[in-house]
Image (cartoon, rainbow, N blue to C red; front, side):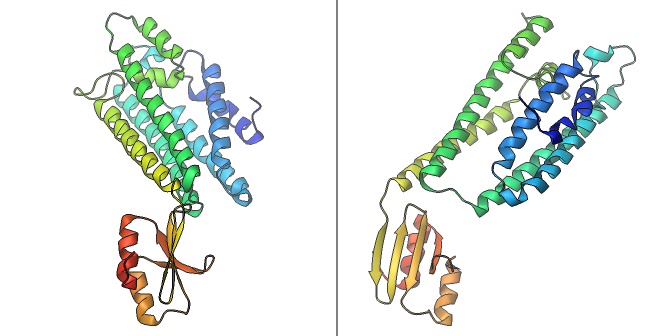
Length: 289
Protein backbone atom coordinates (compact mmCIF):
# COMPACT_ATOMS: atom_id res chain seq x y z
CA UNK A 1 0.00 0.00 0.00
CA UNK A 2 1.34 3.45 -0.91
CA UNK A 3 1.07 5.56 2.22
CA UNK A 4 0.14 9.22 2.10
CA UNK A 5 2.57 11.84 3.38
CA UNK A 6 0.63 12.56 6.58
CA UNK A 7 0.75 8.87 7.51
CA UNK A 8 4.44 8.47 6.69
CA UNK A 9 5.17 11.37 9.04
CA UNK A 10 4.32 9.00 11.89
CA UNK A 11 6.70 6.24 10.73
CA UNK A 12 9.35 6.78 13.39
CA UNK A 13 6.76 7.01 16.16
CA UNK A 14 4.95 3.92 14.86
CA UNK A 15 8.19 1.92 14.88
CA UNK A 16 8.94 2.98 18.46
CA UNK A 17 5.39 2.29 19.65
CA UNK A 18 5.96 -1.44 19.93
CA UNK A 19 9.59 -1.54 21.00
CA UNK A 20 8.72 -2.80 24.49
CA UNK A 21 5.71 -4.95 23.62
CA UNK A 22 6.64 -6.96 20.50
CA UNK A 23 9.74 -8.77 19.21
CA UNK A 24 9.74 -6.97 15.83
CA UNK A 25 8.74 -3.33 16.45
CA UNK A 26 9.44 -2.19 12.88
CA UNK A 27 7.15 -4.82 11.38
CA UNK A 28 4.60 -3.98 14.06
CA UNK A 29 4.91 -0.26 13.25
CA UNK A 30 4.50 -0.84 9.51
CA UNK A 31 1.30 -2.75 10.21
CA UNK A 32 0.04 0.14 12.35
CA UNK A 33 0.75 2.54 9.47
CA UNK A 34 -1.14 0.30 7.04
CA UNK A 35 -4.08 0.17 9.44
CA UNK A 36 -3.90 3.96 9.86
CA UNK A 37 -3.93 4.50 6.09
CA UNK A 38 -6.87 2.14 5.63
CA UNK A 39 -8.85 3.69 8.48
CA UNK A 40 -8.09 7.25 7.43
CA UNK A 41 -9.11 6.57 3.83
CA UNK A 42 -12.43 5.07 4.94
CA UNK A 43 -12.98 7.97 7.36
CA UNK A 44 -12.28 10.73 4.84
CA UNK A 45 -14.56 9.06 2.27
CA UNK A 46 -17.46 9.95 4.59
CA UNK A 47 -16.37 13.56 5.17
CA UNK A 48 -17.51 16.43 2.89
CA UNK A 49 -14.72 17.24 0.45
CA UNK A 50 -14.26 20.81 1.64
CA UNK A 51 -13.59 19.59 5.22
CA UNK A 52 -11.29 16.64 4.48
CA UNK A 53 -7.97 18.48 4.82
CA UNK A 54 -8.85 19.77 8.29
CA UNK A 55 -10.25 16.45 9.49
CA UNK A 56 -7.23 14.56 8.15
CA UNK A 57 -5.02 16.74 10.38
CA UNK A 58 -7.24 16.05 13.40
CA UNK A 59 -7.33 12.31 12.69
CA UNK A 60 -3.53 12.13 12.41
CA UNK A 61 -3.09 14.21 15.57
CA UNK A 62 -5.28 11.94 17.67
CA UNK A 63 -3.68 8.82 16.22
CA UNK A 64 -0.27 10.31 17.09
CA UNK A 65 -1.41 10.76 20.70
CA UNK A 66 -2.32 7.07 20.83
CA UNK A 67 1.02 5.97 19.35
CA UNK A 68 2.86 8.16 21.88
CA UNK A 69 0.96 6.54 24.73
CA UNK A 70 1.63 3.08 23.29
CA UNK A 71 5.37 3.79 23.10
CA UNK A 72 5.40 4.06 26.92
CA UNK A 73 3.82 0.62 27.44
CA UNK A 74 5.79 -2.58 27.92
CA UNK A 75 5.30 -6.33 28.16
CA UNK A 76 6.97 -8.86 30.44
CA UNK A 77 7.47 -11.04 27.33
CA UNK A 78 9.85 -8.39 25.98
CA UNK A 79 11.38 -6.75 29.05
CA UNK A 80 11.67 -9.94 31.10
CA UNK A 81 10.27 -10.74 34.50
CA UNK A 82 13.15 -9.40 36.60
CA UNK A 83 12.20 -6.20 38.41
CA UNK A 84 8.99 -5.98 36.36
CA UNK A 85 7.08 -2.98 37.66
CA UNK A 86 3.44 -4.09 37.71
CA UNK A 87 2.17 -0.77 39.03
CA UNK A 88 3.88 1.25 36.29
CA UNK A 89 2.84 -1.34 33.70
CA UNK A 90 -0.81 -0.94 34.67
CA UNK A 91 -0.54 2.86 34.72
CA UNK A 92 1.01 3.05 31.26
CA UNK A 93 -1.50 0.57 29.83
CA UNK A 94 -4.34 2.70 31.22
CA UNK A 95 -2.87 5.77 29.51
CA UNK A 96 -2.68 3.87 26.22
CA UNK A 97 -6.26 2.58 26.48
CA UNK A 98 -7.53 6.06 27.34
CA UNK A 99 -5.74 7.56 24.33
CA UNK A 100 -7.20 4.89 22.05
CA UNK A 101 -10.71 5.44 23.46
CA UNK A 102 -10.42 9.20 22.94
CA UNK A 103 -9.41 8.65 19.32
CA UNK A 104 -12.18 6.11 18.67
CA UNK A 105 -14.85 8.21 20.42
CA UNK A 106 -13.83 11.32 18.47
CA UNK A 107 -13.95 9.42 15.16
CA UNK A 108 -17.37 7.92 15.95
CA UNK A 109 -18.75 11.30 17.04
CA UNK A 110 -17.59 12.96 13.81
CA UNK A 111 -19.11 10.24 11.63
CA UNK A 112 -22.33 10.34 13.61
CA UNK A 113 -22.62 14.08 12.93
CA UNK A 114 -21.93 13.51 9.24
CA UNK A 115 -24.50 10.72 9.06
CA UNK A 116 -27.09 12.97 10.69
CA UNK A 117 -26.44 15.53 7.97
CA UNK A 118 -26.70 12.94 5.22
CA UNK A 119 -28.97 10.26 6.60
CA UNK A 120 -29.20 7.19 4.40
CA UNK A 121 -32.66 5.85 3.61
CA UNK A 122 -34.22 3.07 1.59
CA UNK A 123 -31.97 0.50 -0.04
CA UNK A 124 -28.83 2.55 0.71
CA UNK A 125 -29.55 2.22 4.42
CA UNK A 126 -30.28 -1.50 4.02
CA UNK A 127 -26.90 -1.92 2.32
CA UNK A 128 -25.13 0.02 5.09
CA UNK A 129 -26.80 -2.11 7.74
CA UNK A 130 -25.92 -5.33 5.91
CA UNK A 131 -22.26 -4.27 5.82
CA UNK A 132 -22.46 -3.46 9.52
CA UNK A 133 -24.04 -6.84 10.23
CA UNK A 134 -21.29 -8.62 8.32
CA UNK A 135 -18.60 -6.88 10.39
CA UNK A 136 -20.40 -7.57 13.68
CA UNK A 137 -20.84 -11.24 12.76
CA UNK A 138 -17.17 -11.55 11.79
CA UNK A 139 -16.18 -9.97 15.10
CA UNK A 140 -18.39 -12.39 17.04
CA UNK A 141 -16.78 -15.38 15.34
CA UNK A 142 -13.32 -13.91 15.84
CA UNK A 143 -13.89 -13.35 19.57
CA UNK A 144 -15.09 -16.93 20.01
CA UNK A 145 -12.11 -18.26 18.05
CA UNK A 146 -9.65 -16.21 20.12
CA UNK A 147 -11.17 -17.43 23.38
CA UNK A 148 -11.01 -21.04 22.22
CA UNK A 149 -7.27 -20.65 21.57
CA UNK A 150 -6.13 -18.69 24.64
CA UNK A 151 -8.17 -20.85 27.03
CA UNK A 152 -6.84 -24.10 25.63
CA UNK A 153 -4.38 -25.33 28.28
CA UNK A 154 -3.10 -28.02 25.92
CA UNK A 155 -1.47 -25.39 23.70
CA UNK A 156 1.86 -23.83 24.59
CA UNK A 157 2.22 -20.03 24.51
CA UNK A 158 4.12 -20.31 21.24
CA UNK A 159 1.35 -22.43 19.71
CA UNK A 160 -1.30 -20.00 20.95
CA UNK A 161 0.65 -17.09 19.46
CA UNK A 162 0.94 -18.83 16.10
CA UNK A 163 -2.75 -19.71 15.96
CA UNK A 164 -3.79 -16.16 16.90
CA UNK A 165 -1.46 -14.78 14.23
CA UNK A 166 -3.10 -17.15 11.72
CA UNK A 167 -6.44 -15.53 12.57
CA UNK A 168 -4.99 -12.23 11.31
CA UNK A 169 -4.62 -10.52 14.69
CA UNK A 170 -2.04 -7.78 15.08
CA UNK A 171 0.84 -8.41 17.44
CA UNK A 172 -0.61 -5.95 19.93
CA UNK A 173 -4.00 -7.70 19.86
CA UNK A 174 -2.26 -11.04 20.35
CA UNK A 175 -0.38 -9.70 23.36
CA UNK A 176 -3.63 -8.38 24.85
CA UNK A 177 -5.46 -11.66 24.23
CA UNK A 178 -2.69 -13.72 25.85
CA UNK A 179 -2.13 -11.39 28.80
CA UNK A 180 -3.25 -12.46 32.24
CA UNK A 181 -6.48 -10.61 33.14
CA UNK A 182 -6.24 -7.65 35.49
CA UNK A 183 -9.10 -8.89 37.68
CA UNK A 184 -9.55 -12.32 39.24
CA UNK A 185 -13.11 -12.64 37.94
CA UNK A 186 -11.99 -12.05 34.32
CA UNK A 187 -10.65 -14.74 32.00
CA UNK A 188 -8.09 -14.55 29.22
CA UNK A 189 -9.37 -13.25 25.91
CA UNK A 190 -12.72 -11.57 25.39
CA UNK A 191 -15.07 -11.33 28.34
CA UNK A 192 -18.64 -12.67 28.41
CA UNK A 193 -20.13 -9.16 28.41
CA UNK A 194 -18.18 -8.27 25.24
CA UNK A 195 -19.67 -11.21 23.36
CA UNK A 196 -23.14 -10.46 24.78
CA UNK A 197 -22.96 -6.79 23.79
CA UNK A 198 -21.84 -7.65 20.27
CA UNK A 199 -24.56 -10.28 19.97
CA UNK A 200 -27.14 -7.68 21.04
CA UNK A 201 -25.80 -5.33 18.34
CA UNK A 202 -26.18 -8.13 15.78
CA UNK A 203 -29.81 -8.68 16.81
CA UNK A 204 -30.58 -4.93 16.71
CA UNK A 205 -28.99 -4.63 13.26
CA UNK A 206 -30.95 -7.62 11.94
CA UNK A 207 -34.18 -6.03 13.20
CA UNK A 208 -33.23 -2.72 11.57
CA UNK A 209 -32.56 -4.48 8.25
CA UNK A 210 -36.02 -6.07 8.33
CA UNK A 211 -37.63 -2.73 9.18
CA UNK A 212 -35.83 -0.73 6.49
CA UNK A 213 -36.30 -3.45 3.88
CA UNK A 214 -40.05 -3.44 4.51
CA UNK A 215 -40.06 0.35 4.24
CA UNK A 216 -38.02 0.44 1.03
CA UNK A 217 -40.26 -2.19 -0.60
CA UNK A 218 -43.42 -0.08 -0.33
CA UNK A 219 -44.63 2.55 -2.79
CA UNK A 220 -45.08 6.19 -1.84
CA UNK A 221 -48.64 7.41 -1.57
CA UNK A 222 -50.58 10.68 -1.28
CA UNK A 223 -53.65 11.27 0.85
CA UNK A 224 -55.63 14.46 0.11
CA UNK A 225 -57.48 16.27 2.90
CA UNK A 226 -59.40 19.52 3.06
CA UNK A 227 -56.70 22.15 2.96
CA UNK A 228 -53.81 20.13 1.62
CA UNK A 229 -52.25 16.74 1.08
CA UNK A 230 -50.38 14.17 3.17
CA UNK A 231 -47.44 12.41 1.54
CA UNK A 232 -46.30 9.06 2.90
CA UNK A 233 -42.79 8.84 1.45
CA UNK A 234 -41.50 5.34 2.11
CA UNK A 235 -38.60 6.00 -0.28
CA UNK A 236 -37.33 8.80 1.97
CA UNK A 237 -38.81 7.52 5.25
CA UNK A 238 -40.72 10.74 5.78
CA UNK A 239 -44.32 11.77 6.30
CA UNK A 240 -45.00 15.23 4.89
CA UNK A 241 -47.95 17.57 5.21
CA UNK A 242 -48.39 20.13 2.46
CA UNK A 243 -50.95 22.87 3.15
CA UNK A 244 -52.65 24.89 0.43
CA UNK A 245 -52.29 27.96 2.65
CA UNK A 246 -49.85 28.84 5.41
CA UNK A 247 -51.18 27.32 8.67
CA UNK A 248 -52.04 29.80 11.41
CA UNK A 249 -50.08 30.17 14.64
CA UNK A 250 -52.17 27.65 16.61
CA UNK A 251 -51.84 25.02 13.90
CA UNK A 252 -48.09 25.56 13.66
CA UNK A 253 -47.86 25.12 17.42
CA UNK A 254 -49.76 21.81 17.18
CA UNK A 255 -47.48 20.64 14.36
CA UNK A 256 -44.36 21.43 16.39
CA UNK A 257 -45.84 19.72 19.45
CA UNK A 258 -46.22 16.58 17.31
CA UNK A 259 -42.55 16.74 16.28
CA UNK A 260 -43.19 18.10 12.77
CA UNK A 261 -40.61 20.52 11.43
CA UNK A 262 -40.85 22.90 8.52
CA UNK A 263 -38.64 21.89 5.59
CA UNK A 264 -37.98 24.82 3.24
CA UNK A 265 -36.33 22.41 0.81
CA UNK A 266 -39.48 20.28 0.48
CA UNK A 267 -42.00 23.03 1.17
CA UNK A 268 -43.75 20.86 3.74
CA UNK A 269 -44.06 20.04 7.43
CA UNK A 270 -42.37 16.68 7.94
CA UNK A 271 -41.02 14.13 10.40
CA UNK A 272 -39.47 10.68 10.23
CA UNK A 273 -41.90 8.03 9.07
CA UNK A 274 -42.92 5.76 11.95
CA UNK A 275 -46.17 4.36 13.30
CA UNK A 276 -46.18 7.19 15.84
CA UNK A 277 -45.74 9.70 13.01
CA UNK A 278 -48.82 8.34 11.23
CA UNK A 279 -50.86 8.58 14.44
CA UNK A 280 -49.58 12.12 15.01
CA UNK A 281 -50.54 13.12 11.46
CA UNK A 282 -54.09 11.87 11.96
CA UNK A 283 -54.30 13.62 15.32
CA UNK A 284 -52.95 17.02 14.24
CA UNK A 285 -55.14 17.11 11.11
CA UNK A 286 -58.18 15.49 12.72
CA UNK A 287 -58.55 13.00 9.85
CA UNK A 288 -58.49 9.23 9.32
CA UNK A 289 -56.77 7.35 6.50
